Length: 475
Image (tube, rainbow, N blue to C red):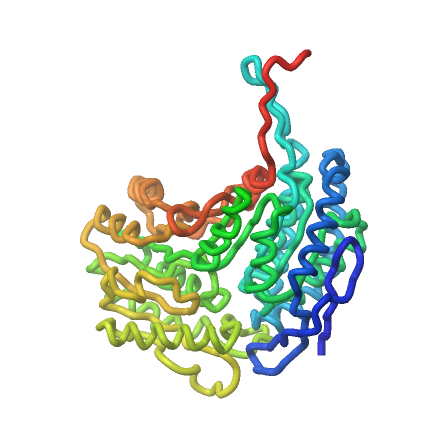
């Protein structure tokens, strides 16, 4: 049992001011693996005070010293590789190979990328008769999700430290232990006291306290649209800045000249990776009418390449949903899809055959989907795909943009001009052509209901800075 009921405040592990705890469950076994403190408003007050007191000094730390700090964090993060892989496999249910290849690696890359960006980042600029200086925004509250326990928290932490802001962090209560390891890493490398503070607990208590605290200058949140909207309202009273990375219902447009088997494999990987618990996952496959049948048949042939099962097995591609509640949510959407007239081509309700324990879902593919259907419009956050057909590329783009979301978009094919046309006309924050490798220096964030602001690279650092213009600065 991993019983970690202390908070990390002002450079020390301290007892919470509350006595309640939250159990953490392994979603593959349904067994309790540990507990954390259910933090209080007073815990947040103490953390914010520590961050506020640390800010004047840390905000003036030299760029070279901040680069060194980020490089030290990356080095110690690498030293804790096995611990991070183990805990993410247990608390999230991520297959052990994915814990290493995706979760661990993304977290490490963010710290390394921020250090590199910082070496050339321009904090000052002369424009006309003005001197422009970018200054740290202040005390920043970071509220992070459960689906990527190291990725989302690391990109925020790395950008904030690069900018010179101090932090109060609330990780998700479903997957808190990876963040606790990060706190141990920060403590080991000597992040100055008060710069980084970790308060575990519920969103309704700790998250609300952070977003409404008068001494928090900026809130960076990743999660659902409903919670993001609530945080914005809390932040409004103090006119604090807010950055939101929210949901998605991303399209993958498959061109008529695409290799159907490669396209089908790409589609399955999109919904099976991280058990579909990816805000930017392509869950709407937009395929040419004439390709539809071959596309479905290709997926049926390829489904065995995405085995569902024990996260500890290196051959497993897809693990469980993170919790029973999330499993029930996915099941309800599968039922809704059938009720609204979509056709089940692959998968369906219930656990996969041979699995009678754990929050496992089947990889599920619906055909005969109309874009107005619930399963095509709402974020399911599970391994459920909607296949929608189109007649020409303009109709495909129209379908792709017919959503309240705009986080990501994908296009797969060979025609250079059509690839460009689709990429330039999907209204989303990040577009991927033909499975191009992710670029951590590029901005990540969404249009419309998918959020406000950007993360990753220099764009992420900018979120934690305020520009000051000085006219007539003496030379």
